Image 1 (cartoon, rainbow, N blue to C red):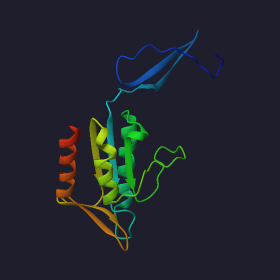
Image 2 (cartoon, rainbow, N blue to C red; image 1 turned 135 degrees about the vertical axis):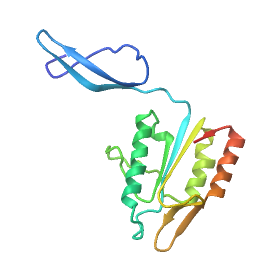
Image 3 (cartoon, rainbow, N blue to C red; image 1 turned 180 degrees about the vertical axis):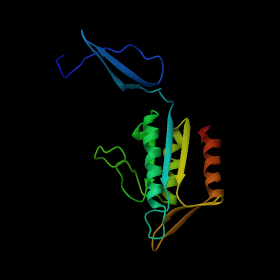
Image 4 (cartoon, rainbow, N blue to C red; image 1 turned 90 degrees about the vertical axis):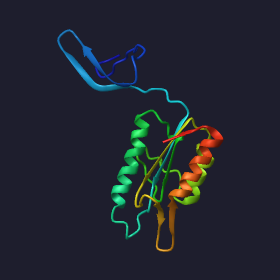
Length: 173
């Protein structure tokens, strides 16, 4: 269009992935690496991310928990998930993609996770559940403050997921 703008019609992609654009003129060429990304259209897939434990003074790995939860959110966006199809539960409000709009949907609590699995996620074809924070093979500390300690027991999570799969045929990961 002019010296600083380019207009192009792109053919249909050969598949999802990052593509480069190579521009030629009479004397030179230039390549824009990863300038175009085609994303595979996902079926009705949803994901729930829980940044557990929260920024309590006893939580020595909160920064790492937050980093991993935010990274999971960004990876899901990069894989074609929409913000509407990611439920991000976190005790603090964060803007992962720096668009000035908070990306966290609600506080990380047992009730919000249970509602997310039983109600919000019930219309998905696939449901990814990503929990990051303190826990063990039998439990996960979902929220900790000076006055609150909420722990998700593995048996309760299994019950919620089994009921969801039995009533909806959703594949959970």
